Each structure stands twice: as structure tokens, then as C-alpha cells.
Length: 358
Image (cartoon, rainbow, N blue to C red; front, side):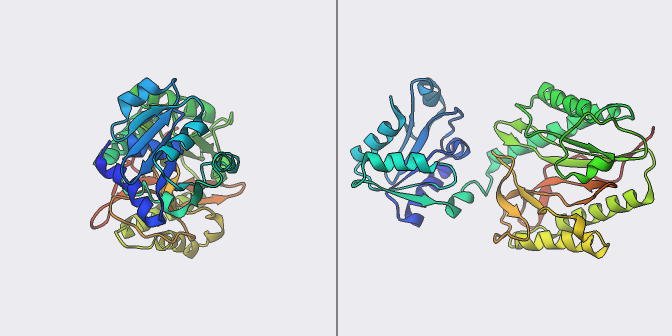
């Protein structure tokens, strides 16, 4: 694991006036020190870093962790407090959204006078926000698996097959091609169910003359792919085709606007304006996108509420959609990395209108 990543943990100490920081979020731990197990904590101090775990993960930690001293504990909270006292550390930061209130209280009760526990929220969000070359490579590989798997499954998209069958076929194909696991519960939403932004695959059977939306992804070395494709089964009515064309125009407009320094809320607004101008504004309810990395949804948020700006190396989705109840819906999604002068799509499946002959 790179020294530069480890340094980011230390930067928090100065930014938040801390003696040490206790990381318990599994994704942050993996990012900072390389440990992929399910139990342990990383203590970052100004002088050295310490990874603490129990005997179940001792060998694994010694193999994976290269930027911290590995120590084992019998009882987790006792092990943490003992190390803090040993090193004379007093003001300790922790991830406000990860460590439970009850756990923090128990830590405070161990040494109520000697230790001060400080909840940190916003500075943590952007910790993994800029991806390095190693991360981009994993994200690119995961996206390539999406394209390969979809190409294999596409011939099975026919009237009479169920959404659930197609979702399973995608999942199994991704695993066979080398994906670690599905990134989330796949969305396969056909016909009127296309109006459900999170229409997880059901037993509904596809029929001719409707749109089908696929939202799926996998993991490679812990990093996720995320992509949405909407296709037509035969000839669809003009209203559905209009919805598709509007979403595609919004997608293209937002993609073309990505560049370092642009406010992320402005990106959302560009896509939203395209959709609103065609009379579908009320049917686009979610944000334009979200960060993708060790988690399928992470920093940054690309929405009207975002206060952040695009920066070179950020990875996020561009996924406008229109969802009309009892009619259907369209979402078109690519995952992009911000470059010095724009963005580069990591996902590769063509997003132009595709009608399958039936």
C-alpha cells in the first residue's frame, strides 16, 4: 500500500488538531493499510501507525499490512485503550458515521479522564476522493468486465425471459469472467417497472415493444463497476423513444461539461435543465451521480445538494433518468474519471439507442 495513502491519514491529525485517529471503517482501513479482513482497527499517530486485530486475523494482517505495526488484542476495546495509554495519546479522532455511539461511550468509560474522543465527519468523506493509478486500473478492469458480460448476456434478452433470469445470468457471467462479487442487487426493470429507479429484478416476463433497463456491476480487487443501459425490445411507442432521447441528451450534456473546478451541483443542473426543457423535470427525482470506489456509493455526491467541485482523479457516475409511472422509464449511466481537461469514461458499453429484433 502506497506511503502517500498512509500520509493522508496523518494529514487528518493536523487538520483536526488530534494526537491520533482511530479508523474502524473497513473501506478506509483497506485504503490506508491494505487489510481486507472484517475485524480490526487502524490507529494513526504522528510518529507511527498501528493495526490492531485479534488472533483470527493476525497472520492475514502481517501478510497484508505494510505501513503499520501489527498488534493483536484479546479484547478489542481494552487493546485500543492500552495502546493509547502506552503512547501517551490523549485527543483521539474517530469516524463519526462508522463508530457507534455505544462503542464510543464504552471507550470513554475505560479512561474518562485521560482520553478525549473527537467525532470527525466531513474531512473523512473526501479521504478516498482522488483515485491513484492503482485504483483507476482496478476500476477500469471492473468496468471492462461489465462490457464483456453484457455482450454475452445480450442475446438472451428476448420476450418471454424474466427479469430475474437476466439478472442471474449477468451475475454468473461476471463471476465466471473474474469478478469478485456483484456490486449490488442488480436492477432489471422492464415495461412499466422501468419507472422504478431501484426496480430490483423481479419475476416479470419481458414482452415486445417495451424498454428494459439494466443497472449492474462487479468488483475487482475491492473496486466497483457501476453502469446502466436501457434497450428496446423491438419497436417502442414514440413517447418511450422520446424519453430515451431526452435522457441520452442530458447524459451527453453532463459528460461534455465535466472538467476540474466545475461545481458538482452545476453538473447536476446541466442534465436537469435538458430534461426539464422537454417537460420531464418532475420525473427526474434523484441526483445525477455518486462517487464509486471501494464502496459502490461514496464521495463525492453529484446533486443539487453538493458543495464540492470536480477535481482531477475523482471518479463518479453520470446517470440521468426519467421515470413516468405506469408508462416506463430510462436511465443511462457511465462511470467517469476526471482528467486534466475533461473526463474519461471507464465504462464502455455503447449508450446509443439499441432496439433488439423480436
